[in-house]
Length: 143
Image (tube, rainbow, N blue to C red):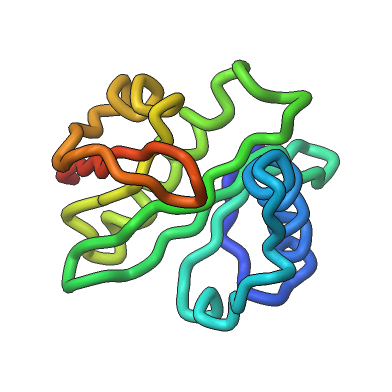
């Protein structure tokens, strides 16, 4: 398996859009089709691909202030969850972002994912809040 950065509006981006829709939005009765995603053209898109080219997991890194990126929209294909692919994707993306000058990562973790991110060194940095109808916590990690 390999982690690759891919451009906005590419075939890989469309596959990631479909995976995000399936894993993150449809279960909540939401759709990315109802959102303006044009700002994603300025974000970094990463995917973990199987040897046959199938997308197994994806995430977006959004540049914030100098040296800071926000990780968002992480999704792992349902048939491949709980196999360490999310961990592998994060561990591959962190050094790629560090090479671009990133020194701090932030994210909004669903409560169900806080343990996952904690094991990867992310720490809770704020109170619970609601996003897309679900409870979240802000988490950060210094690189």
